[in-house]
Amino acid sequence: MTVTTQQFATQDAFEKFFWNWQGYKIQYTVMGTGCPLVLVHGFGASIGHWRKNIPVLANAGYQVFAIDLLGFGGSDKAPIDYSVEVWVELLKDFCTAHIHQPAVFIGNSIGALLSLIVLVEHPEIAAGGILINSAGGLSHRPHELNPPLRIVMAAFNRFVRSPITGKFVYNRIRQKAQIRRTLYQVYRDRQAVTDELVDLLYTPSCDPGAQQVFASILTAPPGPSPEELLPKVERPLLVIWGADDPWTPITGAKIYEEARENGKEIKIVPIPNAGHCPHDEVPDVVNAQIVDWLAQHQEC
Picture (spheres, one colour):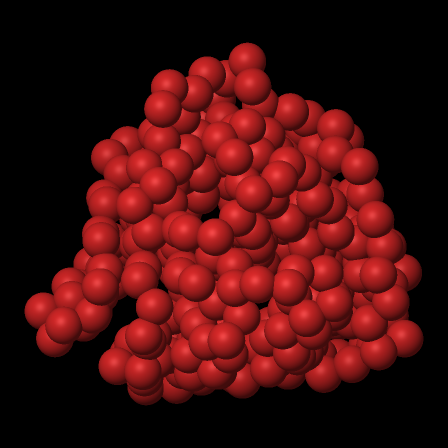
């Protein structure tokens, strides 16, 4: 299937709905009809980060759901201790309430890790998974850091958790200029870092409670690793990886190659000249890969 940028929408183009989950307001959107897909964004992002994918996938004959995870986007910034378990439960309950058949979960970064956990822990709601530059955890595990950096990170976490210094750190990190600099690090093509993308990340950061969400997530346990999860996966996977990602380097795809060699149904697609968010940076390429894979694996 050929897709063009003319099909892409702005982040405000989608009709938004709200669903009450455990007393909190959760924002989501849905477009199209057909086999269900559930799009799960990464850290700091929201429904709008899929603005170049939702219309294309819907036009290809799928019912596309995208959700703002609790703490992000237009969903409530709940004063809780965040963890991957909280969001996995949210995704499970969302599917129970709104989707009445197994769906393909499509996630980027932390959203990809959450999708993988759903496939393992709740296979009854999952038909497959598409992982885009999957994170290895919600945070770094101590053994992943050398001793000096381990000490620095421990000190930084205390700094972020502090009611006084935490607000100072957060207000510096969420400035539009800093958001743009961070995006320049993880997007290979700087032209993809638009004002709309910066606003997409900046606007929710101004919501009451957003700083506490940031502190909780940054200091939360990492959750299960892909290495732990992959042996338990019984659903097909498409693993898409922006080859120039400095945050989760493409060397991380090795564990998926090993799982494939051990009999798991996994297709791995490296995307050249793209960084951490290839679905947004080179959407034509990623959308085509997703549609082709779905045509072979998704049956309703």
